[in-house]
Image (cartoon, rainbow, N blue to C red; front, top):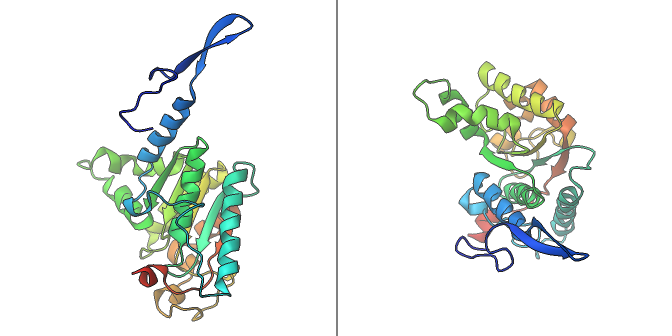
Length: 252
C-alpha cells in the first residue's frame, strides 16, 4: 500500500467495524500491520542496494557450478528456516562467513527484512561506520544520531552488523565491540553478522581459500578480540558461504 492509498476497509483509521452475534465492535484492520512493517523497514537503515533483498527472489544460484549450487541452496534453506522459526531457535543470531561477493550481505539483509515482516524492529549498521559514529558521539558537538548509535546497537530487536572486523583493532575497538556483543548475548537479542575474515570454527585455515590477502591473513579473533569472538559463536548459528567466483564481478 503506497503512502497516498487509503484503505477501503477502514478508511485510513486503522480500525474496522465488525459484528458478532448482532453486536457491533471494532478491531484493528489488516492494513495496520502493513503500515508497521513499512515504517520498520524505513527505520532499519538498510542500504539502497539491498532494499529489495529477499529469500525468495534476487538470490541467484549459479547454473555453471555443480559443486557450489547445492551448497548455496542449503545455505538459502537454512536462512529461510531461521526466519520461519524465529524466535524459537536454538541461537538467536546468524553469523555469515565467506569471501567478498559470495552473497553474505544479501542473505543477511533478506533475513533482517523477513524478521521485520514478522513484526520485529531491526537496524543495519556497517561495522566500521558504527564504530565511527560511536566514537564521534563522545564529542559534545556531535549529532543526535551519533550520540544514540551505541544505545541503538545495544537495544535493537535485531542488529545486523555488516563486514565485522573491517577495522584495525585497538583497545577501544575491542572494548566497544565486546560490550555490545556481550549485552546482546546476555539479553538474547538477535544479532546477524557478516564477515570476510576466517575462523577455525568455520573450517578455515590460514592461507586457504580464493582470497590470498586480508581475508586469509587475519582471523576474526585478531580483529575483534577473543571475548567478542567467543560471545558471537555462543549466540549465532554459523553460516559458511561456499567459495564461488565473486558474484558482483561476475554480474558486472
